Image 1 (spheres, rainbow, N blue to C red):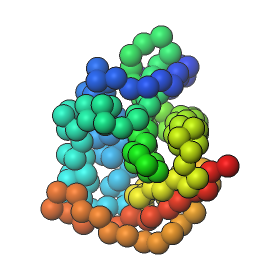
Image 2: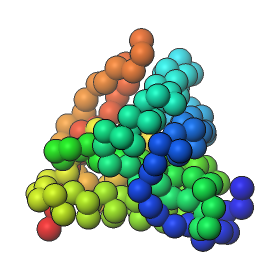
Image 3: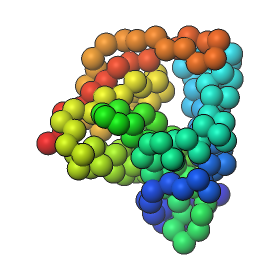
Image 4: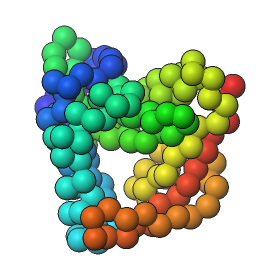
Length: 161
């Protein structure tokens, strides 16, 4: 993948399910080992199946970042009603290029359009700095379970204009 291509944001469709799984598992394999054990990373990466990815698209609002003019998905973010910023993943070759920031802004705008006054997120240790840069504040540490593994995460929130 070339990191120099223009990236367009759009609503995800069920046709994006396999790409969502790929971005999710690749991002975890790249970033999570610096924060979590191998067993935790394995459980986390296995949590998004193709079926679950289709549910993200059909049951929630999911946006993708795709190489302009193609269907090549390099990132995605999901909003879960009523007020949760649920997922944000960017393919490693595209990290630090503003894609996460653009996806986060789109999720925030979507939430504001729905009348949400405060957006909540349970943020992994590897994503905490990114969410801080988006203006989220720490609420409290939390433990979540994925498969048979427990993870430390931070509950965060952001007031919306």
